[in-house]
Amino acid sequence: MIVAIQGILGSYSEEAANLLLKDEFSVLECDSFKSVFLALTEERADFAVIPVWNKVIGKITQNVTAINEFGFTKLNSLELPIHHVLVGTTDSTFEQLEIITSQPEAIEQCKRFFLQNPQLSIRAGKDTAMSVKQIVEQGDSRIAAIGSKRAAALYGGKILKENLSDNSENSTLFYLIRKGRQIC
Image (cartoon, rainbow, N blue to C red; front, side):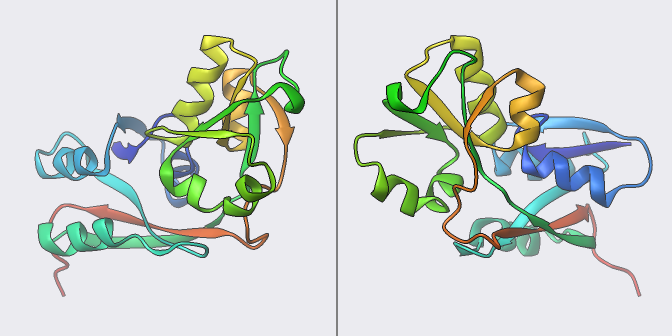
């Protein structure tokens, strides 16, 4: 069984997939939500896990619209608590940071952090986990990423700050979907 997600291992979508699916599965990592929907349409994936709503930013309109337009079937849903952390290289300290990178939606969920730290520049990335992986691989202690504790552990990053979300009760609603309309 193949499950398409936007992002890579360590992303919140992958975490949701692990909780939604009981059987073993392979992950098809996609660099955009459009790529996830195409993977389902072209039958390169059996299922997809897609975020549709977040407690801080609201409805993820592009995904809800695509699910309806493509005629995908929702099989299950999961509200996943989102606990953003700031991840740096192993030798990073918060004081030396200049640039923070992450997926735009994650950055949006952490506005207060950026207002409190105006010295930090923002660089948009494609995915929270990919941002963590890239900063660790680059090894530049001036750059950190917003992501999950799991991504930090998977890619060898150092957690510099926890609880970055504006809302401590932050969560995202994910749908498990498949190709085709529901048959009653």
